[in-house]
View 1 (tube, rainbow, N blue to C red):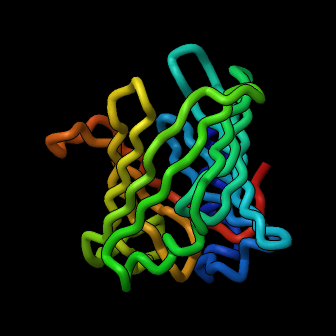
View 2 (spheres, one colour):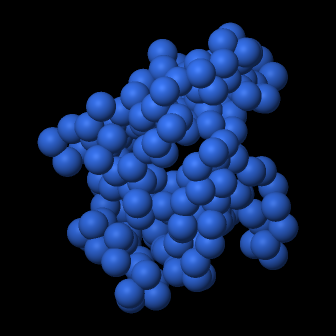
Length: 195
C-alpha cells in the first residue's frame, strides 16, 4: 500500500504544480510513506474535512475530522467514538494570529454526545518558517498551540501552518519544556484525493 501511494504521488502530473488553498475544493492529499500517514483534506461550503489513515502498532487506523479552520478542529470521529469541541469564541480570529501574536478561547469538550468538561485553547505566533514536502516548499507560520482540559495535563504542539495551502503541514508534539515527543512530516503533496 505504501509503495503504491508513493509511486502515485511521484508519477502524478499534479506534482508539476504544488497544491494551493484553491485545490482544497477538489482535495489535497499529504502522505508520509513510513510509517504510513496519509491525510486527505477537502473544503466545501467553508467546512474543512480531513480523512486520515495511519499505521500504528495495532495496525492501520482511520479517523475523520471536521474543522472550523485548519487551526481549530471541531469534531473527530474514529472507531473509538466521537470527540467534539464547542468553542466559545470566533475561531476564525485564530487565522489572524500572525498579526495579533496570540489567540485564546475556552471550549466545551463533548465525548460521544455527552459534555465531558471544559478547556482552554491557546495559540502563539512564534515566527516564520519553511517546510519542504517532496518537490514543494511552503512558507509557514510557526505556531505554538496549548490545550488544557480540566483534570488532564496540558497538550503542547508546534505547528507549521502554510497560509498558501490553508493547512498545517508539519506537527510536532512537545512536552512542557519543549522537548520533542512526536513529529508528523510528509514526503509528498498532491492536488486531488488519492484513495
